[in-house]
Image 1 (spheres, rainbow, N blue to C red):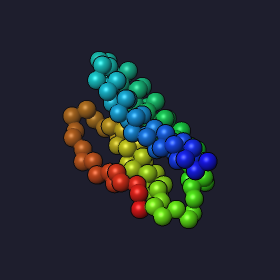
Image 2: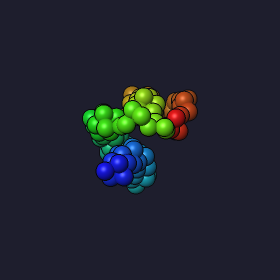
Image 3: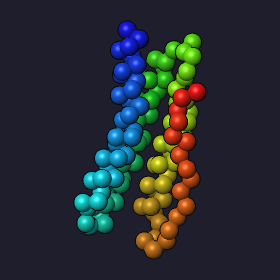
Image 4: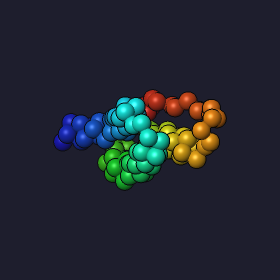
Length: 108
């Protein structure tokens, strides 16, 4: 039972990484900026849709685990990604922006 739960958790945890990677790879093929903005808006929607999945995984986590997954850090990183994408959508086209580093390590 624990093994099955950890594999389900691993699938959910890797979902944000796969989602972001696949979306950015597919964005390189988009030529029209309007299509790019639509794809970026979908990405924001997908990131927001991860919250119930994260909440479910968090509720199933064992409080007695020796190493715990830091769901708060995951949420912070996803919020940084979402905010960065939204900032890109809202920003003028010529302006570079500074991006804060992601924490990346969710084990404690």
